[in-house]
Amino acid sequence: MNRRTITQWLGAALVAFVAAAVSVAFPPAPLLALQMALLAVAGALFVAGGLTDRVRWSLLAGLGNVALGLSLVVSGVTTLEDGGTADYAYAALVAVGGLTLAAIGVLYVVEHEAFDTAP
Image 1 (cartoon, helix red, strand yellow):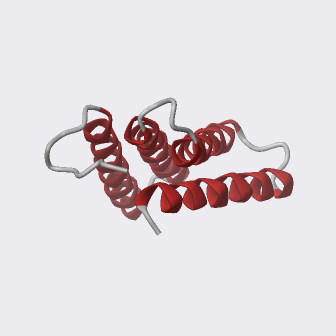
Image 2: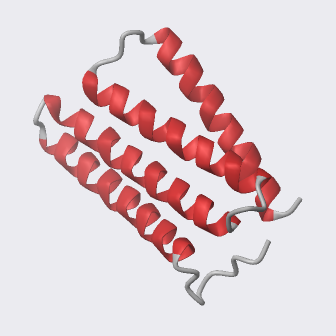
């Protein structure tokens, strides 16, 4: 399997997960709705990156990584309701992870030399 195929299957799994999660938690809370929308966008971009040859696949995969990273940041923000120290630590760690994933996505978009983005 090449990277495009793996990206395509990951995207399909994200879209299926979002469909299942929204059907279970309908109507979702505003932050959960934002997180699910970002996951759906990431999944759609991953699927498109795996299928199309009209646009560079690493551009679509990079934008998908940015959306996935932002959904992680939103996930960390949703844990701050109780306000405990552990909640702040968890939110900070998840935000760092999400922003790191978003930064990797940006590097995919600009075709940074550190990443082999050949199909």
